[in-house]
Amino acid sequence: MHAAPGRSTLTRMASPDLVPLDTDVHWIHGSPSPRRLADPPLQVHHLAPGTVLIRQSKDLTYEAPFILLLLGEDRALLLDTGAVDGSELRRTVDRLLEGRTTARTDDTAYELVVAHTHGHGDHLAGDAAFAGRPNTAVVGRDHAEVVAHFGITDWPAEVVTLDLGGRVLEVFGIPGHHRASIALHDPMTGLLHTGDTVYPGRIYVEDAAALLDTLDRLVTFAEQRGVRHVLGCHVEMTRRPGHDYPLGARYQPDEPSPFMTVEQLRAARDAFRTVAHRPGIHRFDDIVFCVGEGPRVLVPLQLRALVEQVRWRLGLHRRNPTT
Image (cartoon, rainbow, N blue to C red):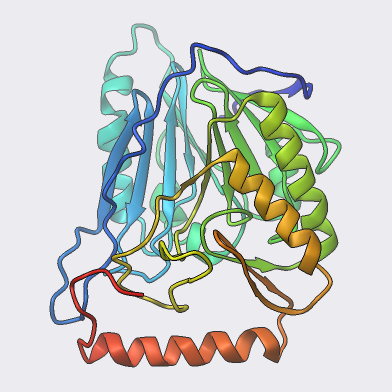
């Protein structure tokens, strides 16, 4: 099973009839100590009909990634499978697709495409739960498999389409954090998904030159497409400008929304231009760039992570929002 890709040109596609998204959500954000775990394993929120955002609990994994499910008339796209075993996610997705599956009036099956924003382990740990699922294609995680599945011939500049049936998505490459990273645009809702390339948190830069190009293309795309919402896979910032939670934090009561604006995307692009060639940790209001993998990055991150782990295990966090 393979959803046929297509081509798209970079022209304005904004519509006054965009389906609004319900982004005013109180997301699960972990528990103050391991002795008082209270979050469910998954939080499922319907942003709009056929648009579902799922968050894995920080009680299970400090990564707490967001997983996006988009439903069309003929197939659905699941973007990422999370950081832990995917059994619970598989059951949840099956329930969400049940109505579409049983409502088929012909002999064709309702299909599921399982793809990834990129190939890091916290976004594909649940893949095995979908292997062998009927009428399901699990896209590979490396660059060659990604471009082959989506039919991308001019990586990363080319924008291709993925038809879910009555809902056509746009896909293109956004390397810099990971060589095979992709962005996904849903013209129906004005949602641009940027994976781990842009989100309110720490952006780990694998290739600075590639990320500079990626951010330029993301801003141009968002402006020309009339994007309304920019969504990544994590939240690691607090609501205090320039302050992020430590690496490995299991309790984040003061985190902002995972949804960012095009203005924030533009600001992130402009900020990265000033630090792209300077290894280290660079903090800005809504985002933190971690450039390189040397001691200037790793030592501060690991020291903060160690202190945070001790505080959490000793139950030193208060229930009220703190930074």
